[in-house]
Length: 380
Image (spheres, rainbow, N blue to C red):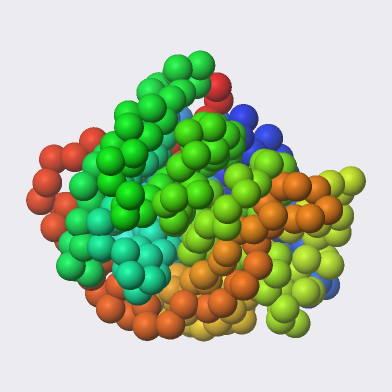
């Protein structure tokens, strides 16, 4: 069986290609199946040039690849999907969940393993309102504004009977980063909590500037899954005030599956190598092996135990459905940086899933721009 990997690059996550590849191989090694699969890979940049991805997939298929696995978004997947329909091969998409699929139903020759980014945003909004907040300010980077997270926050807030009273989108240039407009608004609105979306060093910019304005001592902060990524928060000085996120996975999950995953990936000089991207690679191999190479009669409705919990492939759209976890980001006393604690599975996600499905269908009839790259993949 020949597997083709579409591997991106990112200045925010320089090891992303290695992480995806290593996660995939680690699962095969665990199962003693390394010799059963030949792996070839190509680089797709930040995943934004869909014509180039199409050409590279086409060449892979001509070279005899049976299944293509790639960290791409659903927009790119729809663009390249005709190749898989005509060739009868399978596409396994590794998805951040920060885009909405631009199609209803399913793609006949594609499956999606998702980190459920938009669902995480809905979950953390529900936590915020459950903690008594009804008036919010929303803040995100220029980069994050180009995905569907702001829309998911807005829809979820409205459904909870709450309000977003102020929106702050950062500037394009990092050197011009400021939270001054947000700080000026919050000075006059003490009860407002913050819904936020940042990634990588943009998260660091947000907390550094917010601390300078004294925002976090007066306003609770709720953030997206990638904001609480353990690889990044462990390098960012903690603001001095705990904040909250909903995450797709955590190193802190104490289950046999997660402990085995973390152990198989090993360590670097900075701690465990296991991260969100090696998790995606691991699950990709797990799904391929468990479904006998994506046989449709097995893969549709397939369930498996992942390091993040019980995962189910919904046959109606072929996206995975998995647990989401609340996490508190607090100060690591040993380093002064951030760390996750109190990682608890979110209950009652079905209503959020149904509401999000309605949002996805509604957006099919709207003209709305979106970044074309894979989330967290930037080259500058």
